[in-house]
Length: 216
Image 1 (cartoon, helix red, strand yellow):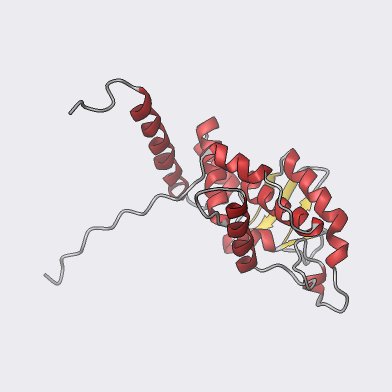
Image 2: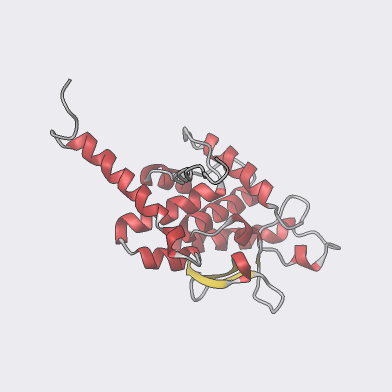
């Protein structure tokens, strides 16, 4: 039996929000302090609207520089990020995200602390003490925000990335384009979203077609 290998377990499908839930979450406004609400709204728009990884999000700087891991070009409506394998890519930033970023940038100086390391001072997204926001903090903020927004599923950063990919693929059927937007080195990684898309279509078929389910 030493040469017998167990069959590979199927990879679980990524969890994505339904389109209505994703829009509800992106449109939600909390009663938090204005700077906190503006920051969190901008983070949600970039995660869902541009498909950023949480590491790419927290690595963004407020302005472009030679040392920056990533930044937002507001005029070109593009996010320049440093992804896995230290590979750079540029992704589009939608109108709602640009508006959310403008609101956040107008309030960002209220939490900028003096005497912080340059890496913290340059960060686009800051915490209460003026330091660069951590990935863990983003996870916590999104979970709380999804509960306040009335969603049944706790939302995390990668769920918004999955939702971005799934919704773009559902609308365009452009697998190669989704691969570029997500920064996947291998298209086989992106193909998991075709399974997710088929699952979505299968549910619609089961719900709508009179021959979808056998009568008992």
